Image 1 (cartoon, helix red, strand yellow):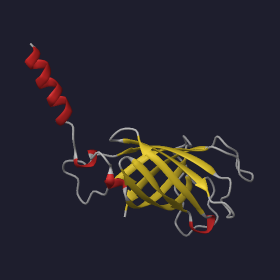
Image 2: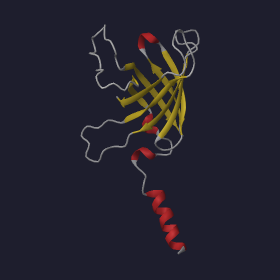
Image 3: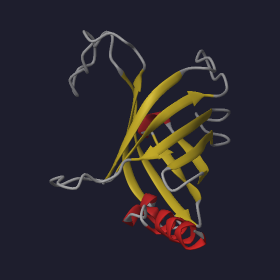
Image 4: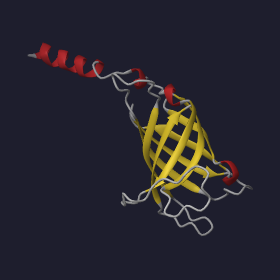
Length: 162
């Protein structure tokens, strides 16, 4: 009976590992195209055209480039929002598939005082996926007021590795 438990323990420990389950989660390091969307439950609201300047009811909350580095489960980097500025990103992996980040505004810039918190997940590769890119999904919350933007705003996000 003892041998069965040892076999089950070993099987459970080694059978679920994938390429992305490395201890230091280095796969998250790199440049990601970041997009977040308002959580609006109305199927009639479309995404706006890229060049549209007067789009009402746009689902898009933000588009940016997320640059991340990870070592031993600790994540650092930046969220580059172009004309809107940058956030300094810090965080960690809670498991092989779940991570949390905090994006903090940079002193003496337009983002000073901004704080956004992220809870995200890695997306596993499809066995028969074609040209599949690494992807991350999750939720973001504005954790402090800034300007007329009030804390508590929640949006969904996804990132695709460049």
